[in-house]
Image (cartoon, rainbow over all chains, first blue to last red):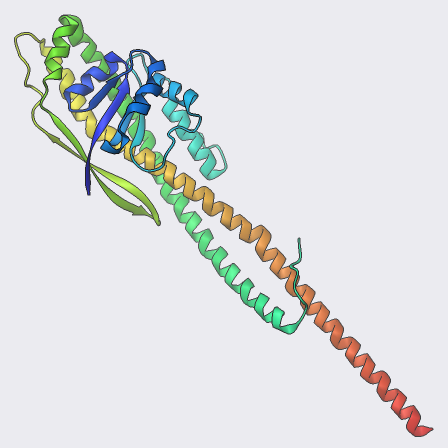
Amino acid sequence: MKELKVAMIGGRTSTLGFKAVGVDTYIAPLPEDGPRIWKELDLSRYAVVMITEPVYEELLREFPQFPPHEGLPVVLVIPAVTGSREIASSALREKVRRAMGADLER
Amino acid sequence: MARLNVNPNRMQLLKLRKRLAVAQRGHKLLKDKLDELMKQFLGLVDEGRRLRKDVEDRLADAYLVFAIARSEVITEEVEEALSVGTMELAVSVEQANIMGVKVPHFEVRMEGDVNCYSLISTPFSLDAAVINYRELMPDLVRLAELENNMSLLAQEIEKTRRRVNALEHVLIPSLKETISYITMKLDEMERSYRTQLMKIKSLQEEEARG
């Protein structure tokens, strides 16, 4: 059993509140800073890396196969303060489509 | 369907029959596995969707309350207050197993208190905001686990489906075809052997008569 931490990459306003509850926050002033921060991140220390949607989009653009690994840390996409863009749910729908071989819209 | 390249003899026929039996059994087992994986996956999808919606709604609320708190004082003060938090958040990772797929299982452990900042220089709403975040954390980690399980299961389903299809549409038909080819060939050989015998016998009889 391992004890790991939770990290978050996102804008200043989105991350600030998480800092108070013990999340290691990495501030990306602009979404374009995301890939640089991701590369510098010591991934072995974290179980979950939360990434806001704008930063996630930028990471996808930089690394077409994102997240690039299996296993830990697990990447969780969350909406930024600017509101949800439904990126996570469309990624989920894509997973379902690939697994079932059909689009299950419910 | 492509016939296998084997010599048509009885030995091969027996071997192929055995292989066909194994392939059919494997196919049935894999198909059962696929059905069960699907069932598990759909359960996860339902739960994941519900949790995702719930978390996103609550996160929006948390952002809102936090924005209100920030608007009441200058930003630096809030940042200063939050950066001294002694709250510790750790996630213990264990390995779980869903239908032979190894998945991580997270347990959240939170220690320490968030309310360690000056109550005078920060607004009341900041407390509410921080409490919101704290309550959200276990669910966020749970959501990460669920969504991760979903993608691992989805990969496994894809792999299993491919194997089932390969067995069902490639291996089993070609084995069946080869078996029927060998059976026919052997029958044909037997028939030609029999006509040869009949021919020889009639020749011998003719010779004896005369």
